[in-house]
Length: 118
Image (cartoon, rainbow, N blue to C red; front, side):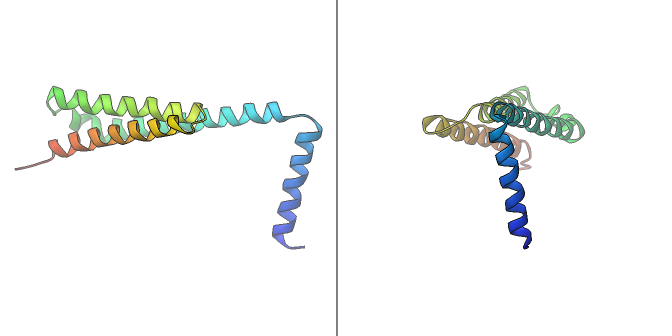
């Protein structure tokens, strides 16, 4: 038997057990918990990156640049959290991408503005 057919059979067996034992609610709950855990893992890695590299440098920037940068990052975190917790489609997805693009633009422009030497 080929590995593809064997794996497809295993998947079909797992699906059959979920349907027969009526475990759809448990599966949905596990999916939501995994989405939250994934979001928290991304936030933790971002925090460690900021703590190790960015904090000392950003403290040297003017106050306005700090506020713009941190506001952009904070709004981006809220936006990504909204994406992970809600099912986005149509206008909501468009708003997500517009807000994410605006946050990235503001943060990158502020960062580059502080690294110009001319």
